Length: 326
Image (cartoon, rainbow, N blue to C red; front, side):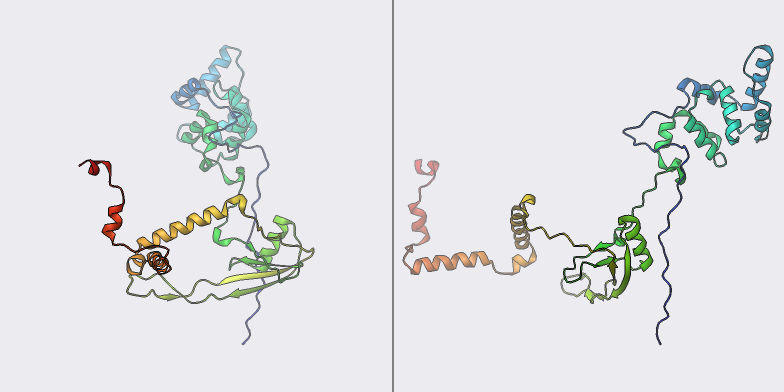
């Protein structure tokens, strides 16, 4: 029975980013000091303040006795509506009322505009300790990404390395065709959207195939047993027909800039050294030693060297100074 053809589904979805003024995520080593909060003295005084309700009562008495700036009646009414357990949650005010309240307050009037925007945008999820921590040091608060919502962050997508889209070198194909190794969950629409949005490449047609891998054997537990058989995960390949031809760059042949010969020689010597130290080197014959003995035998047969016992060969060599003096 033929398999039903299901329409492809686009899995990649983008999220809208807020373009309004908001806090920036600065690097911890280089921060631009544009966000202004409370000074250390004002922060201590603000934390010692019992409640905003008492400050509001004191403010009313000061306005009646002196010519202090009065809080707007509409803002005062909105401030009273934020009452919770005999205290006023002033950070839940709307932006206009929040500006009026903070401009009148002796400590909060110096807070910068981006901090006020951030408080107004997150007024429903903030509590008093979070607001105090923000006002105490806004740059440090914004430097921690966990404190900033997703809408205010610069969204960067880091895909899984296993989900990489790899362009294959295909000299046997026409320049109008390109082959890719794609994740198994990738659909044709995903690849089409990926090439269009990232590289601005138009695609006319896409063919896909899933290639089954060969059966392999896992690492054995011991040297006397064989590992279990298993089949690696299949690989999905897609071949696209391009609207404009693309020629793959030629493969680099001159590798002197990367010191390939020196690196290759050092790696071969290290591999041979590790091989001789392993169980293979202890159970197999030493090939280099055998070659040396064969070469000495050939030189002896050709008359290039003269054979002599070992004790005579050692006797002809000079002895160390300490032994010669004795």
